[in-house]
Image (cartoon, rainbow, N blue to C red; front, side, top):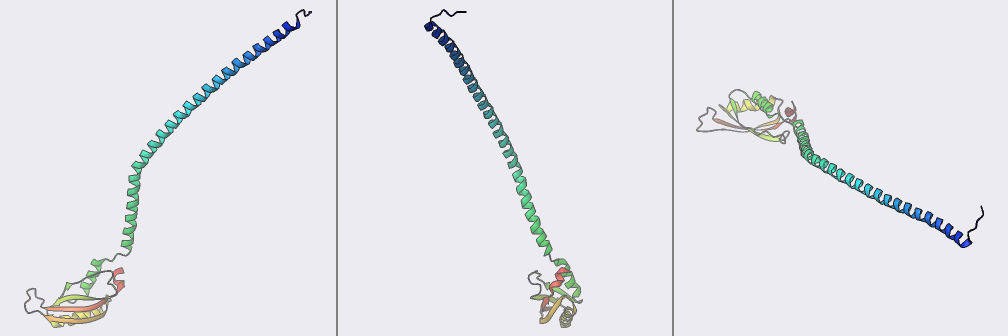
Length: 186
């Protein structure tokens, strides 16, 4: 085929084809740009929804944690109290057993008037006030305490008779003793 078209028309035809191709590229670019914007907006909305869901999950978890925080505090308090109780029980002195041992060491005819037991006083001098029927009871009480394994350094401080006494034990007896610390551990 012979090309009978003048060169100017040929250039316009080539330019027209180039314009169509450029026009198509522009349309395709606009469509791709629009799709990119739509995709970006879609991803943004999905991320926003995910963020909202995550915040709700965190808030729910925090509420549950607050509910269990009271239980945790109670547990820690109870645990601390148990440790304190264990420490106390490890140092526990059974005063009822100590008092019973002292009563068993006393001779008949004597009674305790006052007795102060304290774990801090074990091994240190202390005073025992008792009552007896006769002065001989005061000496028997002193001898009985000396023979007992409960006491050491037993001294009769005083034995004084009361003039008016209605309980049948007119003699006030004061004895200074040092209680052996091991008595509390038995």
